Amino acid sequence: MNEKGTLIIVLVVLVTFIGVMIYQETTFEDRVLQKALDKNYNGIVVKKYIDYENHAVPKVILRTEKETIMFKRIYDQLKIGDSISKQQGDLKVYIYKKDRTIVFDTTNY
Image 1: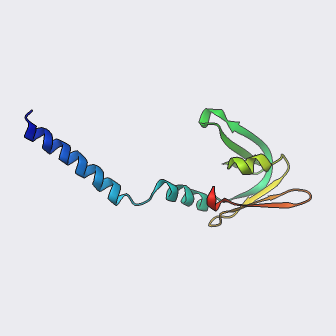
Image 2 (image 1 turned 90 degrees about the vertical axis):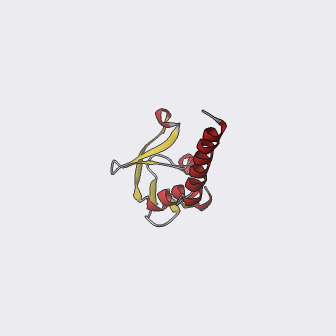
Image 3 (image 1 turned 135 degrees about the vertical axis):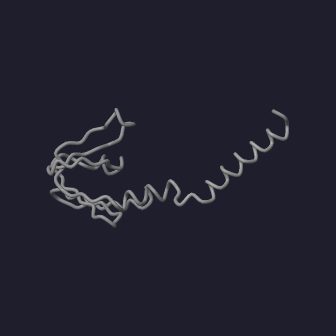
């Protein structure tokens, strides 16, 4: 291939890459935020574990048999028997313990 053909291929790849970057609808952070907003769960924690087969992600299982991924800071505060609540469209997670309620605002996680 001659220099002109190589230059055209490089330009096409470069323009395509720039176009994808410019027109990408959402950033990674936006997608993470939207996933957090979409989550809805509430119940009593019956099991908590680290899923080492899935990048060591902290998970909890609720009495409703719902399994959910948990931020590490929240996971560390949870005990078996605690109640937890997170409403769809809200970034606050509530942990209800016997003697107190802990509120986590996950906006900056």
